[in-house]
Length: 270
Image (cartoon, rainbow, N blue to C red; front, side, top):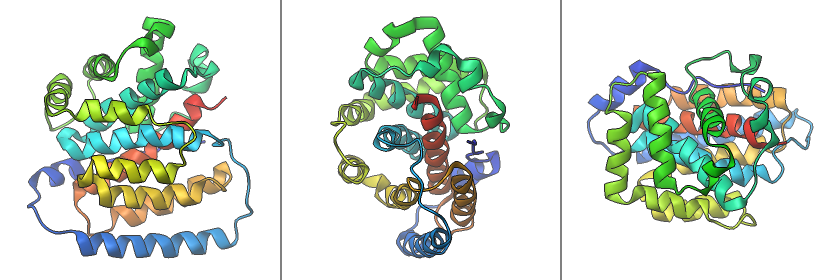
């Protein structure tokens, strides 16, 4: 298993200075490139049942949180906060607590996390820290409280960002009702396919429709890949996204989602 570096400070600074423009064609071109890349990659890959199993839709909720956080002006901080808060909220709704939480040095702090600035790394570390402090009572808290707890950990870790502070970001999401919307996503039935979840999230967050279409391409292909093949596929996927003509904020949001999804699976899957 592995962990991605999600976005650089240069990408964040560029995103903040971008002019508002129409990226419809850029996204269309990117989707064509990713479809072509995926088809070519999968030709020589034997289908394997990965550890994702029923956790595919579970981890998607985390990835959605990261995407919303990144695209809503929070940058790296926003992606970490909402990815982790969404993860904890989903666990609370499903009544599932991973045995990995009881042994974080093995499950979370291993050699897989060599990229210290990865959003996925912080996602898992913060969840482990909060569980160590609060135990199972952590999962009785609503998403608003969880987001505040995560924001406090983000501030303590001093995750660098050029944007607003962690707690200011959370308070802004509370005032706009976005946290409440995310909380409702965590309550989606576990029987829902990931494609259905994406469709419903797009209706709640229309500003993320294009980014979620890209994320869907990623999910369409990783479930049948081995761990090593997933690493190779994801590296190529991220390279294509990074070199595309979509906005830097969208690039960061997509890469944040990939990072959180993969690392969330490592944390929660037994």
